[in-house]
Image (cartoon, rainbow, N blue to C red):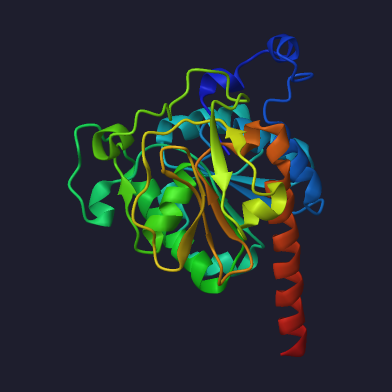
Length: 288
């Protein structure tokens, strides 16, 4: 779960002034970690400069960091010399997906449009081919194994592309929507609404009521991937959440719930799904 550096570098006093306590940058991350068994292993994908990785380690977990930028990794290693940090192409054994209980795909930059059969529009932003390849392969392995999977913003788009779907490279250019999807407001503030669809995971959490979300994207799911269905829309019709009915827990949201107190239930649901998956795997192993 990542955000921009300027939000990480807020001082405790600044956050307290805005009503967010003693410098807890990501309240949902802290609560999510509190739901996990102590002493477990957490791999921080796209760890950047290692800010969250260090906080994960401080909470008593065995933390590892993985990123796709050598410059960021040098900062991360200097900041946390006792934590292993890896370049993205150093972890290529996707059989290891069988050793984890759930995956959370974070937000980030744009995705190479060639990966979903399109040429790049001029509005398409910076891409990371190494990260695209890693996450798409990891996501396909997770979907095949039935692993609990949660995607945030870019993570939701990766999930959809991994299943054969497409995304809009730029919402205004390709849909004509005038709704502001790239807000100019603090990350913990919701700036437009989404409506969960009936019988969706989100409706089970919140009911069929419009919910205010934050918004930091110019791309979005276009054609749904195989097995995926829309779980929420914004007022302009853009798909804001996806899920798979044939899986115990596969959910993607276009906003950043890690900054929104009301959305902690999503992380609770992921933790619960991970516990169930682990129990079922252990039962299968013991019976075998």
